[in-house]
Length: 432
Image (cartoon, rainbow, N blue to C red; front, side, top):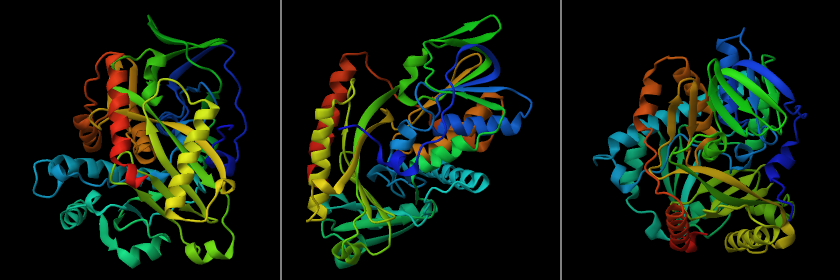
């Protein structure tokens, strides 16, 4: 098992950037070359064309978690029972939806302005379940989604089976009106490839320390140093790596597989040329997509881990992926899986992000909670707004909801998080 991300392999790699070597100065330093960091770089370059911007990434730009997710651009989440229309939680759900719609629009704008070819499809996707008990209060959910501007309708039985090519799912809500699918590695690569010349990118340049001095901030790497007046930390749940503690965020490790193109007549009849996406109603359930070219993607493992998976452990996750696919599409076998990889999700206890001024001249954002394609794109622009003292109704909404929640100290949190995720996976075992 080589942990090769299928998205990146299918997208192809960008030209390499140099490693930081020696001392450099900048008006702005961005740490992290994922969706948020790249969106921030585009925003800064457009607003301050005469200023110097440096972006550092500890590995390759556009090849971290931003390229390894399932490619759902989320505008509308599935409402919880406490968030349904008429319930006390609906007001917060409406604000979250307003932010989500703006985030989806931000993605569309970036794609249009930069000419990014990333298989973008704004036809929506499904919240689908195998067990009817896992999708209740359907009428109330439809009314709630419609109240916040979504286009939602209910599917079940033969109509759902024909749509997805599988009898595994019994009921679903298809949700459009902002929700979209894309190829995440192509999207984030497009953001990276179209960076303006004012942005100097250094790869394989991990920040070992970040200190505030008399004239700004100094970020030290193994072979160099960047001095900058203002710093934007865009590294997801790995903020402690750059010295930002107590953000209320934590990493979850997920793994996924993509099949080879299913060209046989049987699969052509079953799938046709359409594409679709499925999100589970439970956190521990499976994410599924039918991709262009009749490839299937499945993500049905999620866990809290402090160490990366070994090759043997990744092989075990691959077996879980195959089991999940075979439940839905009998006839698939191990040889049909072409790529298997891992990635990290930046989570928070409350489901809301860390979005903060950490210190004078230092700003950080993390905690997209599985909605990183859209919200990560928007966070990049809004982080620049915060750092420059701008105000907007949207930034006000985001800051009002940016309460990630308290995390107990380690190892108490490690134990609790591991147990909680194991429980979520067990609870969703029939949806995996």
